[in-house]
Image (cartoon, rainbow, N blue to C red; front, side, top):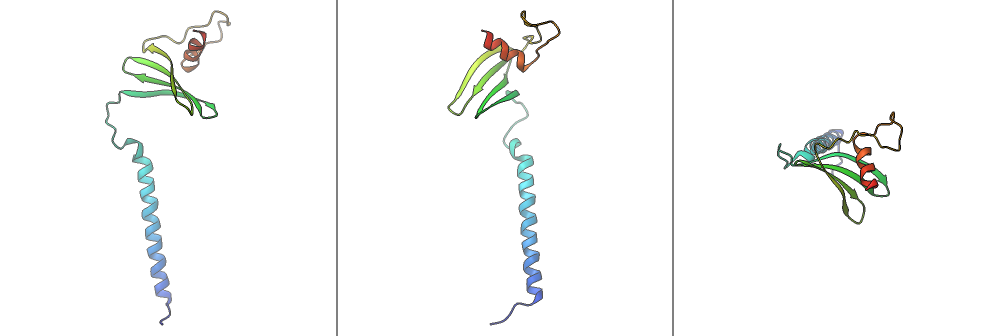
Length: 116
């Protein structure tokens, strides 16, 4: 039985380093290109905003065509909470709040849905 020399160890370590570098390179490429694989440039659905409520619950504002849809997402399913045209102005003030407080975007949509 022959013993391994230092050249054999260097050769094994070099091969191990090459394999590790290939693995790291592959993982980096997957991370960069992963979400884009299979998607075309013409997106029909856009996630405009998402709000985590905790406990595997989220509110998601989605743009689909000419509509904006507010979805409630939980561990058990998904619920449509509201639907608005894209040209809806969400920068209006509530009547029961002072004029200096302005709600825009996601907060305003959520307050409109809850006040229905």
